[in-house]
Length: 565
Image 1 (tube, rainbow, N blue to C red):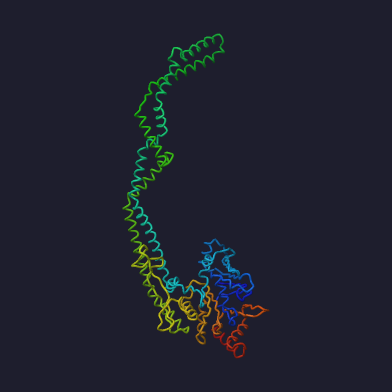
Image 2 (tube, rainbow, N blue to C red):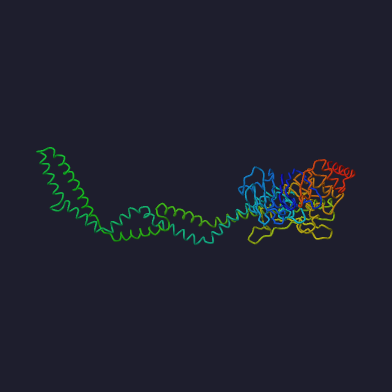
């Protein structure tokens, strides 16, 4: 709901602020006073393009602010959350248009693009006037109106869930089909990788020990010579180290008989002799057992070279290589069961499509019945609004789609079924029914909009309906009917109606008057909420002209009393 509209330096408006109520807000005033300027200002905050000519003469910029209560606007609140804009249940939109043509948009104080502004304000207001856009004239909304009129939302939700199921199973099927295109090559690659790693599993798990063995075989001659020479030098030669150390140990032991303090040293020498004799024995065995095996060396060289190559492909450690092998084996097993998965995926998709098709066709049948009823209801409303020859048709057709899209009997399947709807109107007998957006007459369009809104009261997207020129070309009894119809719409949504007819003004819940005056060399426009007494005078003025007579006041009083009942 729009709670406040503030305008500054916009056309002939110097500065004004109007606070609106729920229900029917009527705006009246003399021709040229600036009533429709309010509509133009509101369109600006809803995302219309700003033009420099709207800036008041000698002003640097025009500014419009609109404050909305978002208590019931879940779609708008969702759009604000997506933009990361904080809100306490209200939306403040501000547009600034400079005299040079530059524009700025602000959402709750945050700078925004025009596209973001339009997304946030989408559905907040529906404006009916001769030259402006109308959400009810947008065919994209018509199917949702038909569904709301038919009251089959549970079935529509079932169709949406069934469609999601089809999309999900189609995606899984496509994955499997796409997988087949490279499956054979992939299977060959994975099988090669698994076999390659398995053939070297012993080498992978015992790399350190095998590397040591390879180095021993590579240097067998040097190792044998070094061990043999060490064994001879320590023990086998006539002048061996162990022989000399044995004589030293005996000498010190003998001397310790004269001086017991040499005993520990003699024991240490004897212990060293024992350790060297053991080392010599071990070196001798090593030299005698060491054998050069060129075949074994060649095998080790080949295995470790192969291991070095697969490390570059699968990982530097044995754990990484074996983990790659397990992943490849699992994928290989899955690919080798491709036919089974393909059959299952195809069966799931066929079942999901059949289920969605059945629901979509059931929904189409209900829509066809509802379309005829909605057509008659709107046409009946038009007759009561002075357009007795006008006929509205709700055209229901199949959604068009390409060969690669989901289809049901030649129609594209979507989350809302297989249908599209558009409201067509023939304003006069014998004329061809045309889309609402192509009607040339502003009065006819406004009355058509009113009829549709009356039938669909509470079902449309907007919480605010704005009627401008709704009374074009009418008067008398028809005007009174239009006033009553607008008031009925206002029971479900906030309405702002600009009118010059007293029969419509009498139904106002809040009545505002726009006044234009010349101050100095400048013309300015202002707006104020009328009291009950002022309202009576304004309706009397609308009935009688410049001079308000007692007869005009009496007629105004009668209009107000009639509208109140």
